[in-house]
Image (cartoon, rainbow, N blue to C red):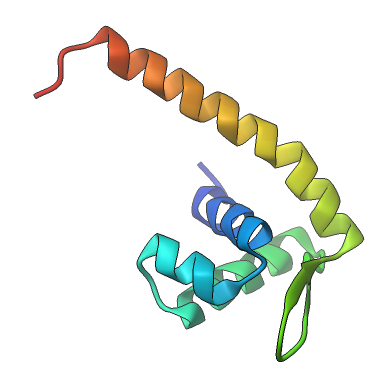
Length: 90
């Protein structure tokens, strides 16, 4: 799925308001998170975050994207859990 990893990273940064915290959750470096966000911003041609040396905050476009994606991610997780609950695992 196009953008899947970048969008997951975007959601974690948006929720934690921190590249460092998102990196810890993903088990990757802060630089990898920054690169993923940069790639997503470039692909969408949108600035999603305002960055300062001390904090990260969503831009208007970033906030709109977050509000649209957040419920979809919850729905996807719910559907995956439904499928997993229907089958015996290895």
